[in-house]
Length: 190
Ligand SMILES: [Zn+2]
Image (cartoon, rainbow, N blue to C red):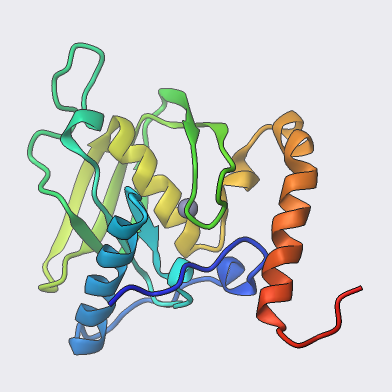
């Protein structure tokens, strides 16, 4: 079942996710719903807060054509999509960085260049409860950092340059106001 996506201005996006203990039917259903919601929006990643939940879970589905280096070789050849990551933690970030334009389903039509480490080592559990510790590269490492940021209440605008944030100030303010109005229906609008 698709769930509504929570936009910038909703306090849930600033909440920190709580680790998941037992992976029960509720969690499995949440994971299914998150994948469905993400796919319906043609997204490549989605974190729990974006569907109003504060449990530590995110989903990623990076198309193979985006998981390639400049020569077209896969950056993460042994990774199977889609991924569901439970309690993911970045254990280590590589020294090399890359800058690329990012968007976010909670920020419709807002894009911005973000510099991030090119590789990260992530520890997480899958839906079966098996623990993984793995190094990810390139675009997939970027998406994972974006989603794990969400789980910590950090948003991609926090990582934009000062100049870019200033340039987006008016649009961000408008989006926040629209979200706040939608959260408080029936209140008189000035
Ligand atoms: Zn996002």
